[in-house]
Each structure stands twice: as structure tokens, then as C-alpha cells.
Image (cartoon, rainbow, N blue to C red; front, side, top):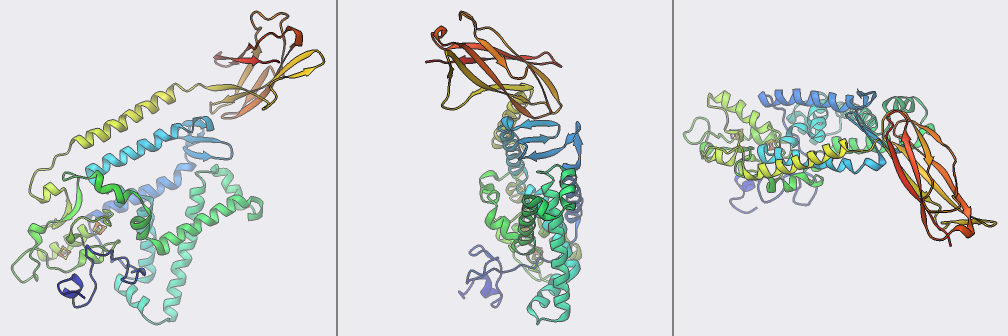
Length: 469
Ligand code: SF4
Ligand code: SF4
């Protein structure tokens, strides 16, 4: 151990530093963390946010907007509903704007308030900190009790507590997996699937099982590794924040030099309470680090210590780098304005695209490799006309063929179904036959076909291009 390293200073006990990730041991194995419980004003605020978000995540697919699920991505039926917006597979490109809009909102939030998403709203944090860690503390006790028990021999008490904890974890993961499936299977259909035997719905059963297994792996074991190793967002956050972004930091000017509570020096008494509560195992006193998920545990932990010492809170606090340097923070900066403007442009394009969507779509397809056929001395073209109702409600459409100009004798046009009624967000294919004497064919010509939505009178005319030898 090199002299002067944090470990050396602590007499051989390893402490977080900037040289190695604390969550890994020197041999590359996992250093499993046992974050201590913490109380304080930010924990109370997070509890309210977590409860509201969990209720929101779980209730959303069951809520209804305009008679349809508030959020449903029905992949087998190639349709989606999102807060009253009904989308068919043809409209899925619009989701690009929804996702990029969410991305820009996240970027703006990050440049203003650092990793506020990670600490307060990411489902990983919300479920891990808001549900699973709480259960762990409830069943296995405080950080010290958990460490002692994990290092100790296998006793009846240890087995019972582990079984109870993992049993609750598995039950919760199964429940959350099903709640998540409700975003892809209509909620009432899902209820029927859950009640039926697994063999009756193998695909859904498999999805639910895989998802529950992944959730269990994540929340029972992988935990902070998801944020540190898997999530890409943490990697580029340093490119999004600047000296004016609000982050969680340590006021080194006030805290250093670290001394005992009874001695004269900085305000930090090196109690390490801010370190043991950190869910990613870092020491924020080493400066802002990639591993900090902005959970605010260290803020509350240090405030508690300052309260006990009768000193001002905020040795660790939400502030910008400028703020920590004693300079006034700027809220609006060019980068925030540019990110917000890009997001606004995307939102505007999305709004116009949604407003300008046709309520139905008509498209003619031919049998591949067979543009025309002969029946005796007759030339025949077969078209498959696809009519798609893009409204969420059922609609009736009429199909009428017109006469092509300048073709004599006029070809015979047979529309297999002159009227079709389609359920909301569904489509059908209507065959259309165009027949004429082969000797009358000179060159390709168009036959107009008009499809009219009977309720609104709105019509679309397409051209069926007749081909011949
Ligand atoms: S909790 Fe506060 S006083 Fe204790 S080590 Fe951390 S910064 Fe220092
Ligand atoms: S340093 Fe503080 S805010 Fe960052 S992850 Fe650790 S406890 Fe949470």
C-alpha cells in the first residue's frame, strides 16, 4: 500500500478514492455495498416523489383517455395509444419525436439541475431506493447489522431473514413484471392471461418470467452496477453540465481542514457519515464524480451531523460550481437555450405532424412478379387496395372506380367490396380487377379509385396503373 494513499491513511481500511471504483475490489470482484439508512428533508421529498411515481407507473396502463388506454403499445395488433393519441404501425415514426422530446427535456434538466432524473425519477432509483432497499432494511436491519450478519456464520436467523427477503423480492418482481406487461397487452386481456394456465399463453408467460428474473437480478444483486456499468446517461452527463449546473457537492472551503469536533479547523469532522450512506460507494468530498447519481443521501447525512454540532447546514449541498466558489450562479445560459430551442422545434414538428395526419390511408399493391395476366383475348390487372382506418373509432368507407380518360373501349373495373366497415386502427385489403381486350391496350394508363369516409365525406383518390405487354 503506497504511503499517503487514502487506504494507508486509514490504517489499511479501504476508502473511496478517485483512482479505483469502490464497487470493485483489487482482484476485480464485486465490493457489495451496504448503504446506511438516512433521514432528512430530501428523503422526505423523495418519498413523496417515489410514491407518486410508482402510483403513476402502475396506474397508467389502466387509466383511460378518450375510451382507450392512456399508454399501450400493442405490438401484435400494430397499434399504440398514448395519452389520447392513437397510432398505427404507419405512424410509429412519430414516436421518434416523443422519445427525442423526452431526451431533450432530460438534457435541459441535466444542464440546469445535474442528475435530478437519476436521483428522483429514474425507475431504477425509484424502485431500488423506494421499495427494495426499504424491505431489505426492514427484514435484515441496519447497515451494521447487515454487514455483521453477512460476514458471520450461517445461522437459523440468517437463513430465515434471507429467505423472507428474497421471497418478498421475487413476489414483488413478478408483480412489477406484470404491471410492465400491461404497457404491451391491454390491461383487461392481461387479467385474463394471468388467470389462465401458463400453457394457454406461452409467449406472455415467457415474457413475464424473463422480465421478473431480470428485475430480481437487478434489484436483489446488480443494483448500483446498472447505473455505473450499464446506463449510458451517466457517461455523457459531464458533457451536459457546466459551472452553473446545480449538482451535489462538498464545500471544501468551509470543510477543510478536517478536524475533530472539539478542535479548531474546518467544519468537516471526518465522521464519514456521507460516505456510508452513498448507494454507489463514493466520497463526495473527493469532488463530483461519474458515480454520483444525485440521490442527496449525503446531503441529509451531513446536515444531520451539522445539526448535532450546532453548525449551519449545507456543508454538502445542492449548488453549482460557481456557487461553491462564492460566485452568483447563472440560470439561463447559451447551452440551456440551445437545448430548449431544439426540444421546442421537435415538439412543434410533432404537433404539426399529429394535426396533419390523414384519418385514413389507401394504398394499392400488385401481386409481385405478375403485373398482368391474360384470360383468352382479355388482359387483366389485379390490385390489392389496402384501406387503413387511422382513427380510434370504427368507420365505414366506400370505394368507387372511375373511368380512365382516352382508353377505348373503357375497361371493366370490378371492386370486390364497394363498402367496408373497419374497427378503429384496423385495415383491410379489397381486390380490384381491371379487364380490357388485349388488342385495345396501347400503353400503361391510370384508373382512378376514390375511397370516401362516409361519416365525414372526406375522400382520397389513388391511381391504379394498368400495365400490359
Ligand atoms: S458527513 Fe459531513 S462532517 Fe461527516 S465526513 Fe461527511 S462532510 Fe464531513
Ligand atoms: S455522492 Fe451523495 S448524492 Fe452522489 S450518489 Fe453518493 S450519496 Fe448520492
